[in-house]
Length: 390
Image (cartoon, rainbow, N blue to C red):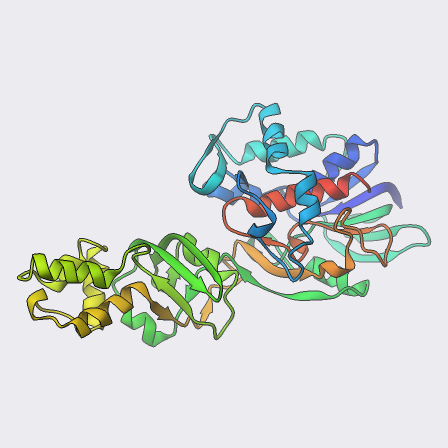
């Protein structure tokens, strides 16, 4: 049995960050990864350029049954700390909308940076975990390549989103094994889908994009919306999907900041001979404008269109209520909402209070960020916090 000070299960963003910090402290660290390559979710993120953090990262950008849990870790390792690390490795980057930061070149640069930072640790890929058990002091990890032991065990195996990348609910199984509760996981940052009737109603709109606001309860986001052949996607839908639950109604405003009724009445006064659809196509994509007119039976010239008809059309534009039947699920979800219940963990160290030496970090934990680099910042912050103490 090979012995280490720390075993980290999972060579993703959080696991590599933790391994790097622990190895810098002189700890003997072993990282075990089931896949053949490390950092796979990093590699595919941001269209291959890694949206590695967000300048606006703050606790309010995260979902959790305990919204305050993330505060300590995010404060101790901020987005500016990670940017300093990126600059230290001379990785050029740029800012996009809403504070998102991307590599100028490739996401592989972030992976190589993390590998370099964790050069003091042993990283072993293609290793399946077959069992974990407590020892009198520490833990034993059985794998298909041997048995290893360590004083500290860090679970950084992520959630089940994007299973084709090797993602699974392994971390939840380990949590339950040690008596921890798991907040039921569900797909987050994922396209939403509709029943056959609604899909037929929207046929022909696939590919149409419009800036919109999506509202679910007290939560709202304003970004691009994209019609797909299954339903709706785009950043605004991905954002609201993390808050949406089956049966919930989502309200969409296709002209945020504009009162469609007031605008259409003004057009009717100034250009009464124009068709409603022609005017609406000046405000929205033509295909969408035509469909909205058809849905509300509001065709014809503006001069011949009553206030009631314009109000009906405007409500469809500014207050379109949709009831998705589901989402595309973990298959395409960028993150998992839910996970290991934080009430069992120390917010400063990520250690399980009832099981000394056992830690959970990253996506495995019930902390989920908004779209735009926030989930990576949680990975860096939770990995750093854990790496300082294991």
